[in-house]
Amino acid sequence: MSLLKQSIFLSLLLLSSSFAQHPADLIIPKPQSIQNLQGEFSLNTQTAYCSDSLLANNALNYLQSHLKQSSRYTLQKGSCGGDNTIRFEYAQGKFPKQEAYRLHIESRSVTITAGDEAGFFYGIISMMQLMDAAIWQTTSLPNAPRSWLLPACLIEDYPRFEWRGMMLDSARNFFEVSYIKKFIDRMAQYKLNRFHWHLSDDEGWRIEITHYPLLTQIGAKRGDGTKLPYSAFPTMKGARRGVESGYYTQQEIREIVAYAKARSIEILPEIDLPAHSKAAVTAYPDLLLDPLDTSEFRSVQQISDNTINPALQSSYIFIDQVISELARLFPFGYIHIGGDEIPKGAWQKSPAVAKLIQKEGLKSLNDVKGYFFERVDEILAKHHRTMIAWEEASQAEAKLRKETRFMAWKSPKSGEKLVQKSRQVIMTPVQYLYFDQQYITDKKEPGHTWSSPVSTQKVYSFGSVANSPYLKGVQASLWSERLFSEKIADYMVWPRALALSEIAWSDKKRLDWEDFKIRAYTYGIERLKVQKINFRKSNRSD
Ligand code: ACM
Image 1 (spheres, rainbow, N blue to C red):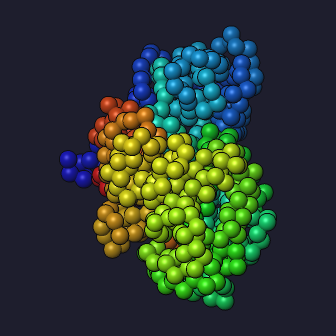
Image 2: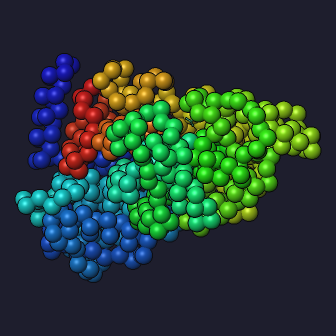
Image 3: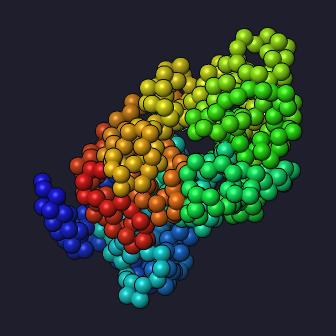
C-alpha cells in the first residue's frame, strides 16, 4: 500500500470506530483471549460501583480520577446485585497466573474479576482502552463526554512475562519529579510493571543519601565551576558549558514509590558500581579511591578515574550504607548495582589491589571484579535484597546467588547463553530495545547512532525470543546523554513503547505486526495525542 493510501485507510478506520468499535481493535497489549458479545454498556452519572476486596482500590481510584478529570463526576458506591454497576470481584486461586484478570462487559453491568491488585488494575486499564480516548485526557476539555459506551465482550487475560520494564537514565540528564510521574503513569497504561531507575553515573549522583551529603552537594552538579566539569554532550538545560544540577530528595522518592505502587509498578533503583562512578568518587575520593593508584585509563565514554576501588574496606562501608538507605526507600526486593563497562586498565597500578590479589589468592583483575560482585552480593543479602546487574557481572555468576538477575544488553545471544547456564535473565538488547538509539538512520533524527537503528517494527520483532523459565522478561532502556528535553524523551519512547508493551505481555503465538500496526497507528496514536505526548509521527514501520 502506498503511504497515501495507507493513511486514508487508517483515517477511515478511525472515523468508523466512533460508531462500531470492535474490542479486539482497541486494546494494546493484545489480550490472550477476547470474545465479542452483543450490546453495549453505558457508563454514566448513574453508574455505581461495588467491590468485595481492598485489592481493587488502586483500580477503582485510577478509574475515578480519570472520570473526574474527563467528565467531572465519579461513581457512587452501590449494591453488587444492581444494574448499571461496575463490579470488582475477588477470585482467590481462580487464575493460574499472577496479574491475570477477567473483564466481562454486558449491557447491564461490567464485572472485573482478579486474584491480585495488579489483575484488578489491568482489568480497569483494558476497560478504559475500550472507552473513547478522551478518558485519557490530562486537561479537562469543556465538551468532554458525560457518558461512555463500552462494547460488550469477555476478555480473559494474563501476561507472558513477569518483568515488563522500562529504564530511564536520570543521571546523564536530570528529569523533574513531574516528568518521572508521567513516565510511570504512561507505562502503567500499557501494563508495563517495572520502572528501572538509573540514579547514578559519571555525570551525576541523583538521589539523596543522608549519610553522605556530598554525593548530591558535589555529585549532582556538573559543568563550569563545579567539580564535575565533564560534559561530552550538552546538558538538558541547553548550553554545552552551563551548570546542570538536580537530585531527588528522600521525600520525593517516597512519593514516587507510592505513585508507582498505585499503578502496579515496582521501582528498581540502580546505583552503577564499580565503574560509571565519577560523580561518587569525586564526592568521596578518600573513601573510594586508592591514593597510591597510578593507573591511567579511560572509559568507553572517555572518562578518566571513574571506578571505585575494590580493595578498600571503606568502599564496602560506603556501599553498605548506600544500600541500607536504598532498601529503606524502595520496598522492591531487587536492587540494581550496575556492573557494566569496567574500563580496561582500571586498578592495574593500585597497590591496594595488588595486596588484595595476594591475600585472597586471586589470579587476575577479572577475579578482582568477581570478588567485588561477591562482596556486594553479601551486602545486598544482609539488607534482604537480591542483585540485578548488567550482564558483565555474570563473569562472577558461579559465586552469586541463584536468584540474581542479569540484564543482557549487548545482544540477545549473550542473554541466551546465560539462560542456558540456568541463570535468570532480563533481555534489553541494544539492537532491539535501546530506546536511546535512532528510529532510522537520519541526521535529522534525535538519538544515538553507535548501534543500529531501532524501529518500532524492530522492537516488535523481538517478541519472537524463545520462552524459558529463566527468561524473566524484557525491558526497554532509555539512556539520556542525548535527551536534551522532555519532548525528545517522549519522542524516543513513543510509539516504540506500544510495541514493547505487546511483546512483554501477549503470548508469542498472538503477535502479529500487521494487526498490531493498525491498532497502534489508530487508537494507540489517538490516545497519545489526547495526552499531548510528543510521539514520533509515522505510518510506516519505523
Ligand atoms: C550499558 O549500556 N552500558 C549497560
